Length: 329
Image (cartoon, rainbow, N blue to C red; front, top):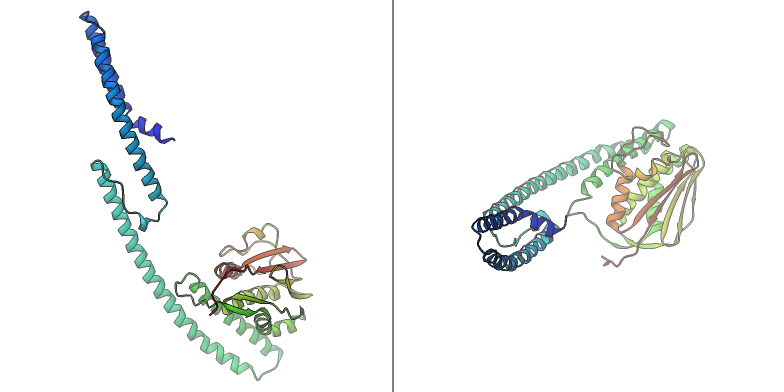
């Protein structure tokens, strides 16, 4: 509703009372057969003076409204410099707002401490879990059998899940260790593919890959985590055929598989946290965190990730490196 409507609605009772008084004077003067001008003239003067006062008050109220409207776009912690209190109601409302601000600050501080405690705990937990993982890898490295190879894959999968936990916790951390520099996509892709070599061999999948000769300004560690997650999904959901890795213009890394694909109704939501889909994917125990992490990582790095898929024909993941000016480190 327009401000002027709300303003005049506020003074509706006063207007009705003023008109009522005028009517009473008219009736009284009429009963005593007094000149009507004796009522109209002072009424006109009252209306004129009241109109000037009303206009000034309306202008002042509108300025206060604009000031409050500007404050409404600020965060709760940034709301300050309220308009001057005009009455006791304004003062009480400002006290309530300040009380809420303090309460929000206390809650935020408490949540921040809780978050830091949680990150510290799981960071220690991750490093502790890595010790038995490393021990298992050491025990299995000298054994070359079908059973040992499957165990190595499972140990590698555990290592991936542990890394995902740490990455998930650090996504919103203010101390996230991003280091942007000029990186070779070939080096990142080769290291990522090497980790899945055993699964490629066991499943008989073909890898189509040629040197990309492509460089991008990014954080190598976080981009590697994103590419590894995409490759993990590609290998996991591809029963036959293979995976193609290439670079297309403009500045786009393409990872394409011949897997089971993703149902059309699932595609719009695959980057949502916890969404696993009900069709097109066979693993109903999936966490729904992997692609969410990929999207968040790409956003933080200034990149963009998209997915195209068709059930039964495969999935294509594209990582677009949106070039932005960054300082090399």
